[in-house]
Structure formats: C-alpha cells, structure tokens
Image (cartoon, rainbow, N blue to C red):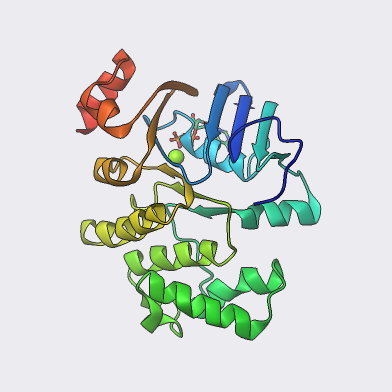
Length: 251
Ligand code: ADP
Ligand code: MG
C-alpha cells in the first residue's frame, strides 16, 4: 500500500456522493460506499440497477458526473500512464472472459505485467505459471482460449488480473455466462482469494458465495444503495420492501 499521509477519506476504495447519467437516465444516484482493505463486498440488485456501471466507474471505464472516487487515498486519474496504472491496480473480471483469442493462455497473463508493469519476460512467465497453477489451469498454459472450457477461461481471466498485483479486484457477474457445472470451480477460486485478504467487489447473485466469502452485501435498486448488511442478516432478515421483493424472486 502507498504511504498516504494526507489521507482524508477512509477505505481503500471510497465513493462519495457519486452521480452518473446516461443522457436523461440517472444510473448512479448519490452513491456513498467505502470498502476497507481486505473487505469482500457483494453487490446485488435487479437488472438495470447500476451494478455494472458502479464497477466500471471504479476503474474509470465510465467517467462520473459528480462526486469523487478515491483509490488508496488518491482520486482516480483520468488519462495517460496514470490511467493505465489504475486499470492494473483495479483488476476486473467480466461476465464474458475477454481473453485475447490469438494469444496463448500464458501470453494472456504475461502481457499486462510486461507492458504496463515493465516486468522482464522470464519473471513475468514464472509468475504467470504460478498463478495459473493457483487457479488450477497450469496445464493449459500453452493452449489458446478457444481450447479451454468457459470455467477454465474465466479462471485464466482471474489469473490475468492477479498478475498485475491489483489493490482491488472487481468481478461483474463472473459466473453468469457459465454452465452450472463450471460455476463452482470459479467461485472456489474467488473464495480462496477472499480468504487471502484480497479486497473484492463482486456483483453476483450467488448467495452461496456471499454467505461463504462476503463481509457485506450491498443491495442496489434504481441507481441507489437501498440496503447494506452482513450476508446472513441480509438474506434472512432484509429490512426494505425492495430487498424483500427482490429476494423473494431469486431465492
Ligand atoms: P446492472 O449491471 O445493474 O444490470 P447497468 O449498470 O448495466 O445495470 O445499467 C444501469 C442502467 O444504465 C440501465 O438502465 C442500462 O440500460 C443503462 N446503461 C448502461 N450502460 C449504458 C450506456 N453505455 N449507455 C446508455 N445507457 C446505459
Ligand atoms: Mg450488469
């Protein structure tokens, strides 16, 4: 972690009064959210409630209209090398695995560290192989993405983000494009990561994951954070009507 002596906002990631519009559509409404180092926050809510936009705002794939987002005490940079570094510091795993189809699994993982982190090739490869082993796909290192199952590709995507030594990992519905039998192998990797004190923001409706790994559930609806609680409390005793209605549909 950086040595931020003038830190005014607590939390490794701190969103203060964040607003975002797409034209007339107000998609993030006065979002206040602070995430501590090592904390695992699950974000759930109906489709269209702003969950993906929230994630994309944290690594500045979407600029915000007002408010502030701080990472490790610093405002998010908006351009240039600082922005590339931010994207490395904030690892992101999407629903669609987004691997480079014409690069091998190993090359997918070493690309960022060699280009953005300026690591040497052999150091990057050594580290990539260790990460691929850690997520259970070490034997696939020399294959191409299309030769792997969806669950394997998603685990490669996680290894690729981890190779950058991120300060925080964002997961946007990482298992929703997977066949049921592959969901567990991806969630197991995420639970393992949570157990190793990675700071994580996870958009998912996988209650099992939330219960096993999350410190906090944030329920979003209509661009707002409507309710926040520990997972057990949220799932068994939701306080707002909107959360109750939502849970009655998905549980
Ligand atoms: P969620 O991930 O919770 O389903 P999103 O953050 O993807 O929600 O979307 C929130 C709202 O913003 C939705 O109404 C969606 O249609 C809209 N939206 C998302 N991205 C864009 C965009 N690039 N341009 C216009 N509208 C968008
Ligand atoms: Mg989404």
